[in-house]
Image (cartoon, rainbow, N blue to C red; front, side, top):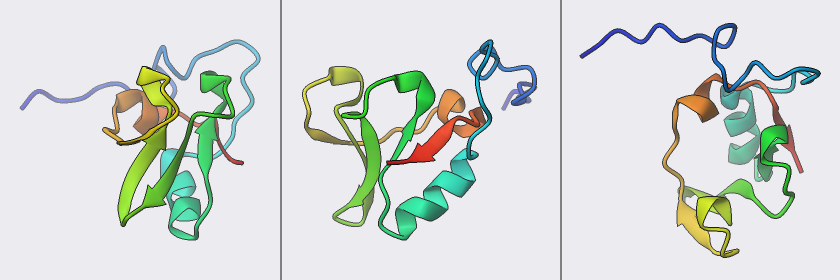
Length: 87
């Protein structure tokens, strides 16, 4: 397996001018386990959010934009971002 060298400090996903630091993904998932809905500032759409549903991490809307819940396949951008917030 190749070594992963991207960090929040070097990720092009995280580097965004004027972006305020929010929660890390780990901090956000802790909130989800308490029943909260989470989103990212980068998504710029309050109708797209993550939540626990039927004991699974789900995303509403997401890439498909259909407003339905889908299993959330967490990627590097999600894991490394620090713009998570509770809605």
